[in-house]
Structure formats: C-alpha cells, structure tokens
Length: 391
Image (tube, rainbow, N blue to C red; front, side, top):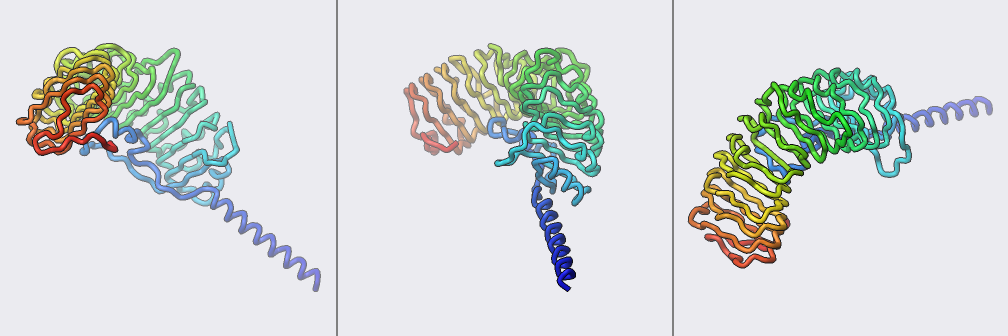
C-alpha cells in the first residue's frame, strides 16, 4: 500500500510540475495590441503635421510580445496561427547577442512582425517564409547586414528600419517589394552604395521618410512618384531631385537641410502642398506661394530674415517660427484663415508686424522667449497673446 501511495504521489507531483511549466511557458509572452501609425514614424507627427485625411490606413493587430527564442517556440506551440509578433528587450533580460530562432518562420499566418531589439545578431532566412507579412518594423542596432530578401514579401505594405548605424550595405531587395506604400529609413550611414537606385520601382509608395541618414535619392528617375503623399528628409545632405518638384500628389513636405540655401520658388511648384516643415537652412531664395498650404513650420532657421509674403498663402491655418537663433525680422503676418500663430525661442528677433484686419479668424497666439523683441503685443484683435505654454 505504501508503494502505491508513493507512486501516486510521484505521479501527482509530475502532473503538477508539468502544469506549472506549461503555465510558465504561457506567461513568458503576453498578449498585446500591435501596429498602428505610431510604430511607423507618426511619433514624429508633432514635428511634421500631417493632413487628417491621409489615405494610408494602418491596421492594429492582436498579437504577442516575446523576448527570447524560448518565448517564440512556446508561442508557436500554443498559437501557431498568430498574426502579429513583437520581439522586444524587456527590463531585466540578461540574454544578449543571440541568433533569432528559425522557428519564427513557422508562423505562416503572420502579418505583422516587429523586431525591437539590438541584441539579435542574425535574422534567419526562414523569415522569408512569412509571405503573408504586410508590415515589418526592424530595429537593427549593432547589425552590419540585413540578411533577408525583401522581394519574398509580396504583400508587404509598410516597412520601417531604424537604428541602422552599423549596416554596411543597403538591402536593395527592398526595391523589389513593389506593393510598399510606406518606406521609413532611420540612421543609415553607408560608406558606399548610399544612392537609392531602384526606389523608382516602388510605384505604390505614398510615404517616404529618410531620417538622419546619408541616403541620397537618385538624380534621375523614370517613375515620377505620382501618388506619393508625404516626403520627409531629415539631415538632408543633397538637394532634392528636380522630379519631386514636379509632383502634384505630395501634400506633406519636411526638409531638414545640411546645405546652405533652399529655393522656395521650386517648392512653390508643388501646388497641392498642405503641410511644409523647413529646418536648418541658412538662407531662403525666391518666394513661397502655395494656394493650399495649411501648416507652415520653420524651425532652427540660420538666416536673419524671413521674407515670406503670407498673403501668398491664402489657406494658411497655422504658423510656427521656432528656435531661429539669428532671426531678427519676419515679414508682415496676415491671413484670413490663420487660426494659430506660435513664435518662440528666437533670441534676436526685434520686431513683429501683424495685419490685424486680415487676422479675423485668429484663435491662438503664443509669443514667448524672444528676449530682444521690442514690440510685445498683449492682444491681437480680441485674442490675448500667451507668454507661457505647454506647447
């Protein structure tokens, strides 16, 4: 009898141990909502305002967050039909510099994949089996190569690659992923092969971000990017190719220059622009004349005068002039559609001139941290000027 009791007790302990291990496996990853616009760069929309009626629709996925190969293998056992996975470093994780398991390629229904970890040294080729993928977000810090053939992802619509400082060669197979609608590339610093020859093959592209990189757009391209809606180039190291200025589809333009002069006459050819952000230029040439422009953001301008004739911007709703260290003068500010004016952190700005008769729809004025400003209006029409703001 004692032996039977002992055997029964051992069996019970084994069952409990098994249940405990299974419970531990399940708890090693967590259910989470993934995707959405923020993950693909709209986290910068405070700096680069976008039209609310953008035709790009990012999905949100019910998926799982994992932090190790064990998590991935456990998830595969419990939910092989999973549609969204984020692989992410968690506080307290000690596993560093590992190769991602080949099991990731067995999630045949996967449509969203985010690898948000700089601990992974190698991506397995088995990722290329994930032919249902619609969205990919890679953080590739410390990697020198992206080993994947992006032409395998025939359904891919949104691709973001960031923290690519150590990548030695650009993955040109991206230009064979011809269903891409958005391409956002952050922190590529290539010693050679930094011209994006082949980008003209992405005929469905609606958003292009080149952020803090030395990537250069080709001077000549057969495709004219005639459905591109948003173009943002941060740390721009070469002039914008002429074919972009011929575009009638671009509505949001952000240019953060690393060269001296920007010709506003060229930008004025883009007649359907609604949002323009300009930063770090030393000088503006020509005149900005855009009938549909609603938002104008000029930050960190290095020149001493902004000569823009605001009457040539009849649809302008919001104006921001921020952090222009050498700016002393701004031309007369006016506009029947202007609702918001923010002028801040311009230490040498001496005078401001408002045409109050043509600011009849004004709702907000913020003028602050302009230490040299001589005329500091307390009110424009019936709108009190705010000196402090959480803006």
